[in-house]
Image (cartoon, rainbow, N blue to C red; front, side):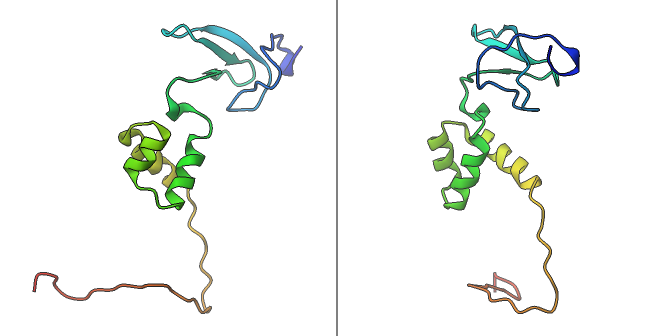
Length: 124
């Protein structure tokens, strides 16, 4: 018996639900590409053990963050990760929404590197 009195079949050592990290998984049909689908008995989420499309891999978001920090442009990042630029832009927007702005304490001195400002009309 698993959690909450649920009986289930584990399909391999080291496999776990990506959502709740539970090991209580069962087979849940196949995809149109004949890949095995699994369902978590704890939270009910369904997933595949191996995805064909690279954007669904578990480390995709972390790779995107790393490449952005290393100043790779959008097309290069999409090419390296083998995903479309549209998907990459949507992922970047989703990642950006989760970023919490840091608190900036008042009354402290900060040093800036390369600050640019412009006052007036550029066309003149």
